[in-house]
Length: 499
Ligand code: UN1
Image 1 (cartoon, protein in one colour):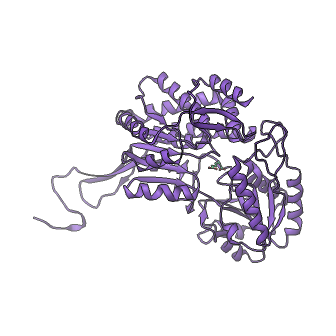
Image 2 (tube, protein in one colour):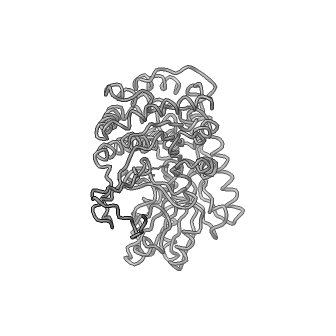
Image 3 (cartoon, protein in one colour):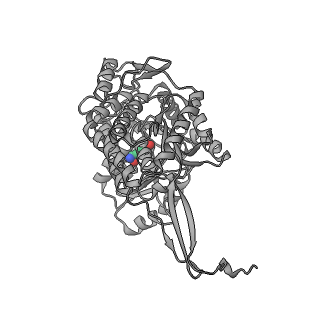
């Protein structure tokens, strides 16, 4: 049934049905095959990069506001196709409809942002120490941007990168997750259509490479790929980053998170409960920003924890297409094995587990559905410091605020974080230099579900990259510092005298 749905959705989006091949595409909803595709070979990466490079040479000369017009039109076509594209996201990634629609909205938002940005790629004018001199900086297009994305946000993360890269004057070569190539084909087709409408977009400005880690590795290694923007696990980043660094390429890494929330005694319990359930169980715990660790003050734990169990017990797990379902499937068998393995380890560490069991879903045989788990942990054990991409929330209590912050930061990852408090001092400490060490630190807002306007990314093993809003565009451009002498003399900087 899903296979037929895919054919219809692709047709609605104007994507020609690609030939069958060795890359099997399954739906996590029931494990059934959606289609099969021909993967690219590592040898084909060269050709894709070469085409994008020659397109870049022309595109960099197109005025940035005109480049913005391409992205504006991409946003417009996404608005028109929002529901259909979201349907494809549901089939391929297993997220619920509201979240799939939200993901496409995130694409639209970044297109709007990038369109405005295309008139605001500002440099600075800097006071020169030399008379009759002007010092300034300018931002120029960078080159080919290789974009490697993950299954959990199969379309939005590409849009964050592509929208900025394109207005910044770059070519884009996209290697999506091998688990979600159909949504990638759809995005590529929508972009190709608006590019054709515009008339002056060089062919091959955006190309798609389907395949696994072998294809991604060749892309990361390619000397003509100026920027590698990679989203995925820390393990993937650990493979990609040294490759890019070895050839002095630029990388933008958005890797694992192990996101925590501190719940302080002055908390508004209703707000905290809702935020926790969405952040920890939403998207079946498969966001890089998902809430994985909860530090609850011991004075309110007796109030909060029963509420959470009650809320978890009523969460509806099932086919993400069904009305009222809040938790869809895990992506595949490997994700389920990792979830089960983590729960077994939690138990061995002395954790008390609520939920976590596999759920049978009508029509979902072959899918891996689990009840989101709450795990009371006696301590932040080694397991808790690792990211398991599943809906497992480790709960620990605290007495001393400073100790809670220390534990909060005592993990290798540094993506998203939150505090729920109405105490001004605690809030400010959490946001201060001595507080959360993450790229995202929120107050009375959960760690997931960031808006497009802010820079998105994190520190430590999360990789340090920033995507989307604020000045993240600077990663997609090269900066030139220019000194202009309009005097009739040649004073040297620092007062140096020479001939
Ligand atoms: C991701 O999981 O890779 O903040 C991205 C969020 C979303 C993006 C998540 N806007 O949760």
